[in-house]
Image 1: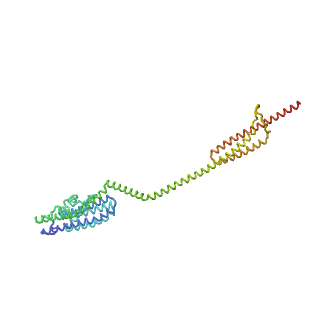
Image 2: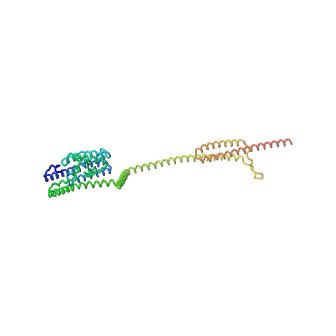
Image 3: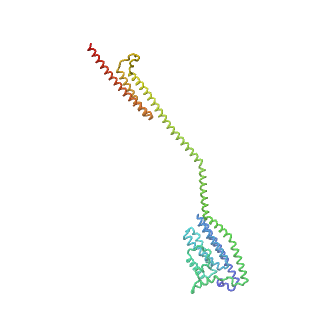
Length: 420
């Protein structure tokens, strides 16, 4: 069958050369495949701040690159072509369904366009190795497998053998293209070569595949290191550490801003403190000024009260002096005093009236002073009023006694005159 595919007839050396060319084409396609998917994935990682999304995209890129290099380094060029077609087709389906359809939307559109371009290239690669009917059968098998496994996203290591094992061989009456495609899995592409040539060819192919893969290992290692970095960023401990670092950075920024604003704040606070202190001093000064005015008014009112009381006391002393009792019998002989004069009592009453008026004025002045002076004035007024009332009663009693004494004298004088 391999002879029919490569149209080599009985020329083993030409067949080996064509197989070697097919292997080189697979390796070039693998390089193009990996080089095409890396830029859009890098742009996707830069465009997102989600560490989980970056880790998932890095895992996808690493698995795709590893699968492509591993398939291109396989021992059978024909099987390598089939596996590359499976890889490109299933990857495009996953990008359409999972990345664009469910998770990332148009952010993954660039990567989708790359896979839609790579899939036809992989099919063109199979044109020279597989008959057209078997290519169509391969595409139907891939579609059937995807329908049976719609939620599988890790398809980088799904090979044609896995697809064939999953959907099974067709039963009797099945398509010849399916049968030919399944039979291809067990073919040895170098079985028709001379044993010596086959050993040499296989050894050379093994060395070339080893060198090919070894040259791509550094790229895979770089991707693996980047993957570890993204994985480290998604660890809970790292998330907490970054959160703490952000908190510390924010605190340091706030502290720096406060330190920068501290001179202005200090000047403002100092000015506010001085202003508050001066306002408090002004308030207390106004209170002291008002208190001094009240004290001066109280002292002036006290002075007026004292003067009024002195005048009242002198007037009262003069009035009381007129009512002094005569000396008792057997005492020293005193010179007779002035006879009783009612005008003196009238003058005393007028003086008392004036004193009462002055006392009322004093009370009015004291009402404007302190409450203690008002209470003292009230007490003095009440005392003076009682004293005046008592004096009037004594004057009235004295007048009555004088009248009775005068009446008695008159009656006695008439009795004596009648006897004579």
